[in-house]
Image (cartoon, rainbow, N blue to C red; front, side):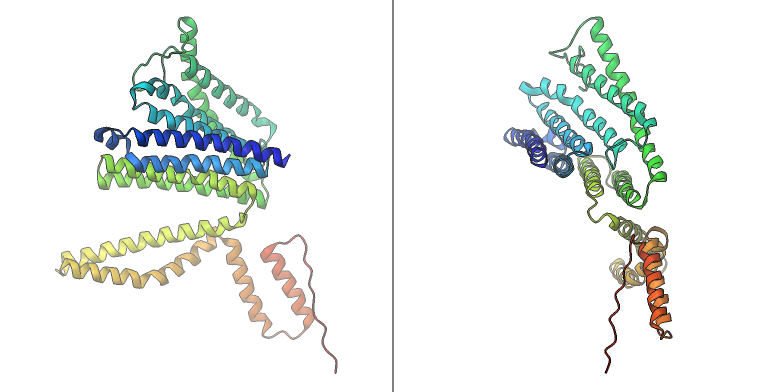
Length: 396
């Protein structure tokens, strides 16, 4: 079973990589004019898209190989293949001979996103939260089927910016039905995607400790995507609209989205599963510290240049030194407070260990020390089983 899963999983990965490499090689051999290259984002967009596709395809292959009974790996592999087809279509539309094919392949992007709806519904165990979610799964499947049929055989290619005749399209009343089916399927996929996200909340409330840690991994990745979206908006405000802003936005967005399959892979394989609490606390702490120090730096520069009339280079140097001096004490204070909220287990364990060390100074009875130590380990680590071995004293 594992050997067969290995060949199937990595065969899909190889096909995905071959499609992506072919599209990139074709684009490299037929470079776009300078004006079109600026609009498309050039090489940075290509690297960001490649990272996105490779993340989905590789994590999907690993999960399908290591856990072939869990459909999440196969769904991620299918999403990676769909994104590769969509990415090749985006490149093919710039060339006259392949423009129609490129437009026709545009529907595969939403196919990949639709498969991710099932990933969220089945995460992390590969099954629905309960039988009450079956209608959502059936609706998602119907939405995907309608989207594929409608786009593949509608009279015009719906994913094109302007109406383009579909070489394999159906005309007449059947074509109108297929067009309406494709448009309605978008709304159905969007509704099931929202329901899938809500299913994570339902699953989290009923989950045990290990499953909650798995869910926190995907929530953490989703939070990074939201942060990347905010950074994109801020970058556009600072840099202004244009090719540079578009490249930066695409790179940040694709890089953040690539973390989703990575987080799913860690959660499903349970590799360093419980490190998520420490990662979340560190991320929040450094974000707060960065914001505080940026505020201090800006405030000191404004104070020195506007009120004290200090020369700008001197003010910048002084503000930089002040921010550097404040970094370590501010980070320690913020990290301590954040650990109380986001990494409570570690904070409680530190407090328990400190209290035990203080009591150990005044305790001489070995039995009391043993019972106290067993209680501390049970409260801090919550193990299923605890054994203690004490060396006997040597008699003279």
